[in-house]
Amino acid sequence: MRFIIYTFFLCFLASCSSGPKSKTTDSNSGQGVGTDLNQVLDGVSCANADDFRGIGIGRNENEAITQARSNIAQEYFVEKLKTIIDIDGQNINGVASTNTYTSISQNAKLLNPSDAKLHYSKRQGEQIGVVACMTKSDAAKSFIEQQRQVADSLSLASSILLNTEHPKHKNEAWRKTQMLYNDFMRIQNLLGGWGVKSPYSADEIYTKARENYKNYCQSVKVFWQDVKNNCSEAVFAILSQKVKFEKSKCSGGLNLSFYCSEKCKSASFGIECSYDPSLSIESCGGEKYSMLKASKPITGGDMYNEAKAREMLTENLQKATFLSEWEKEIKQWVPFCSG
Image (cartoon, rainbow, N blue to C red; front, side, top):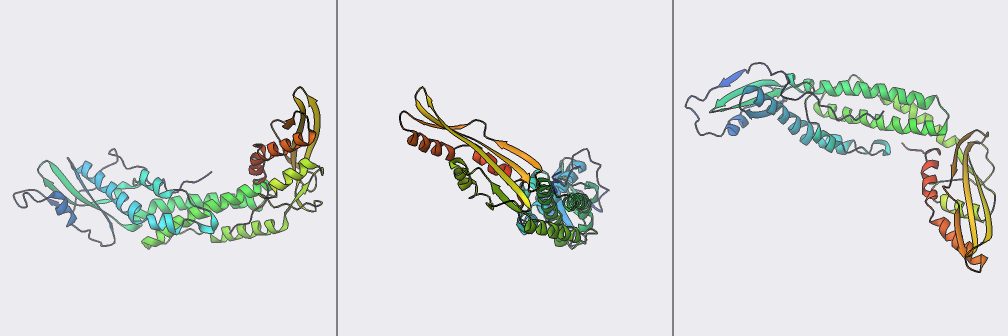
């Protein structure tokens, strides 16, 4: 499964239990009348300078503390840490990240809201303003739990990679291993930015998987076999620009066996020529993995001249949609080296 690491904040609704009673409470008893409540709150610091701090204003204390916790999530987890998450971890080992900043912005809710403690409360008229404080170790709890889940998924993906020689399955396991390692390292970078040490590591698992796939890439080649006609030459010329083939006898790896019937015949409008291509993806030992066929024959015609009909046939072949479909499928089978 694709683990979306940044849907990291869940329970942050008004239904969550309220925080503990404030350490400091002010009432509006004539002092500071007319002073903006936001200015008052801005002047209140947490007892620990390293704590995450949020302010909130509401009609009652529960409403205000809920807003303060949202402020913590938005201010620290979205704005100040987006560089660590979105840039520092953008392309680990050549695999691009998802749009994590958008995901964070949409899901900026604390998993453990009660750990954002009520530090200061002030009533002014019909409003209450609060300051909530959260230690970095408390903020890290949900990330460490998510990292554990990513580590478990990474271990499973790498195990599949190490224990299969099926070309498509091995490629899929390697892609998933890379993706999960990237997710793991983004959390690691985030925790490191807070000075929090994670109990989990993924380097040994990832290094072993990477070396296995690197050896696989170096030992497996892709071979092209065809029927040596105009159709074969044309299709090979197009696909070989997208995928690296060896046009020789298969000697270990993946074999692409291409067949294409060619024919020209008289038709009601003149002469019609056609190609009917198919491609078998096999092992060099003869195990058949996949059969690709064009949805319909490729045709070209001319009223009088067969040579011109063949020219039209070649033009139509180069524009045929099956070629891009085949390219996409072939690339799921051929090995690729990355990282």
